[in-house]
Length: 245
Image (cartoon, rainbow, N blue to C red; front, side):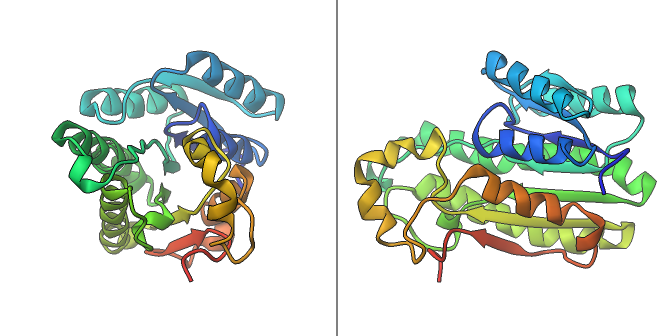
């Protein structure tokens, strides 16, 4: 499925991004491991990518930095001569009620979770259009589907990402590029560790009564970027144990 393909995974040093990078590597995809600060963790991911028999390199840079994302795509093209897959995974969560959210916190969430995806897409689709092939998957959230108190900036940015997904799917279909989003629920990562004190309470709201694992999301992403999913585009698919029902 992925042999000879090249992917950029943003926020790939930990959690869901890490699982996606490794899932792609296991099917032969070369992976650009993007990270912002966690170089040590990113190096571990790259090592595992290589142990899986695939190739890749590290790229440090914030998705909220347009020029850095342009350079990342350029570096990918210089290294491999192609870019087939973009996974917009990098994101931040500031768990505050709207009334308590500072303006700068709101802006930071929008810039990272939504504008960052825009920057990556803007530069990544150029080579995809030229090669008349591409797969883009945006990592959204169940918070964009089901209102969750205390996640105003996060839910708003992810809802915007869903809208961007649908627009891009229509704009890029002519070029053989599919664009989808996955919307994880409570997945066991560093980001959701802030909910540990109320984990049992949250689990009781999930029909399957348990938190998911990063691999649950990664397996869906791997399918969506495969040839088997070539007729799926413009979708927002929840991976949440039934939470959004």
